Image (cartoon, rainbow, N blue to C red; front, side):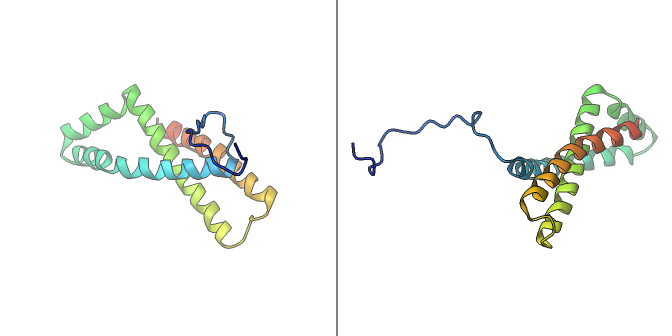
Length: 128
């Protein structure tokens, strides 16, 4: 077969072996966080509605928020909020041509990826 010809065989890409740059991982996480925040809107509005429905509703909402699965969900939503916020600031700085050069955009991506879960844990600890 001529090397210039393409094979008709399908190409198998093992996505677990592809190493993405840290900025790409941060960008994908930014999109995932945005989708998660959007999908959580009905749940959060329902919880707010329950809490504002009266004394009984408020106590039921606070009981729901004390459940272990609820704590995990709150951490996930706080992570999404922190990550989306910090990544948005990073993108604004990149749009202003700050931190565009090679070592800086990697450092800022790592900063977002590390600070978002730490911030989420701090916020969750503060809510306890």
